Image 1 (cartoon, rainbow, N blue to C red):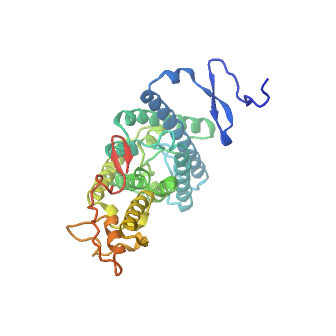
Image 2 (image 1 turned 120 degrees about the vertical axis):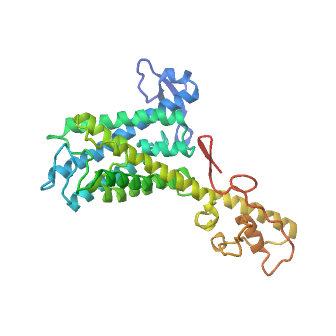
Image 3 (image 1 turned 60 degrees about the horizontal axis):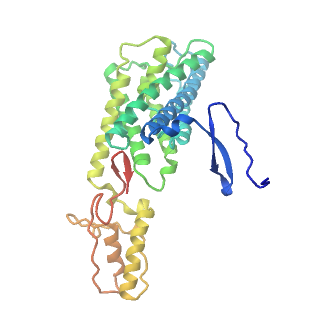
Length: 374
């Protein structure tokens, strides 16, 4: 008998199989696996996992946001409840409470689920990510269904748990017209979606804390939008409560069209700054490991060629107009090579030409075939 063999701590459930896997320190532990998933091809299996993640993530995000909204509206003096609507009185404490609830709920749940499904929770965000190529269209369609179902489930649970009529629906307030409501939703959604593009779709050294910035973006947008439109920015967020209450205002369509237009605006601006090669405007702002590898490679080559120890430049200082000449843009690698020769060397070093997304230096992360590469 091997007394050093790892002991199983998992439950042996009928229909499930146990797979040994390495834990911390190389130790093994038993983890349950669903049998049929092992026989599925990777693509269907991954789509299924993403759908489950989006359903649960959307449910949790909206459940806590709806719950806080219900609390705020139930406690607010003079809060209107026509059609289960968000308060129609400009009570700043209520508006702040609701905005904080949505922002923090999104930040927490996006941080939890981004490794499972991407943590989208929003059909408008899903549309934008599909348009820039960060999410494939089949995946986008599947998670869209999961998001709608998750919003309906969240609204249903809130209606069942809390006493009184559910007051979390998005309706126009403050004498806001339908046209104004449409454009408010469009601009607020554009701000949120573009934030997601730059913090999550564009990979950089701060990507791991992107959910904080995304949650803050929603918080800021909600501060503006809650009073006038209910602060939807998310078709699923508006659709779920309407289904549960059975009340669809005649202008419900603005909560679909507005966020969709906002996603298109964000995509257009994102494409525009990518075409301008925005990475060259402030190259030292995000000096990541990929740029470091390029600097180290050329530093080692220069030392080998000259027999001298040439100091590495500080990329944050390489932003002058002379370094980035109009019509002849140079990469940070070429700039670094010139800086090394300043005052102490006269040998000519071939400058590496700048290529956007190809060649020896990639201009930041590039979206391609549903993924992001450098």
